[in-house]
Image (cartoon, rainbow, N blue to C red; front, side):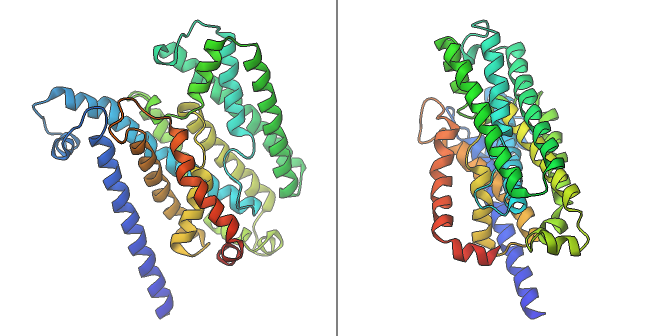
Length: 350
């Protein structure tokens, strides 16, 4: 009993520490950028007070706040996806891109860019119509692949076979994208390449009211799966003996992962390594595979890591914004390499 109390107390301390760090990173995201805004001004704007510099207020409310919220929710969503898929497939390298859903979104965007020709111009010149087309294309592509995966999940009993199907679908979709880019103009290939670099600033203030509820629905659904996820850690046969409906649970997990991946990729582009690395960082910090602790912790940690990556895209004093996917592998790749080199330790945690 004393050990359990100690563990719960340690978990609370670590969770509070990560929450406070994430909160600090959130404020720093509103403070730093091409225009430096003092922290006290940021806090006054957030509390609804007026400040003398109306330009600062516009920057915070119309640009940096939507961007920081997007980073927070995207990081949480991708971290949850990674954790769900790593548990479902019992594979430490599973992440939101492994089933080809991200690739499906990429294909949708590549098709939109190809079919519209040069009418959308450069990425910076895309208007609301062009942005809507890109998001719609990404949604359509992601859900097309998700339907294929769900159909196969109903026919295949083995998670390993389903994983292989997902990887093959991803390769096929990538092949189509290569064909499309080969026949596209240099301008459109450049436009597609920019989208693929990932960006948390692409969700506008008006779109955030749609983006956050979609992510929240997926996250709440994931939180309801903590018990079957813990049972799956012991193997499918053990989970069945505990009354877990394997096929139904698998479809629910795929639906949740598909929804979160499709929404985040459609609005932010493919964001690499967050879904893969954050669950491992959470296991390293907590030293447990219990999803009742791991899943909420991943939510906060994923948001914090995404905010850190977003902050680094504008550091140190860089005039422009660095590509997001140039930052995320720097944080994620060492974690994955450490996991691969410490497999015995991680198998004990699982």
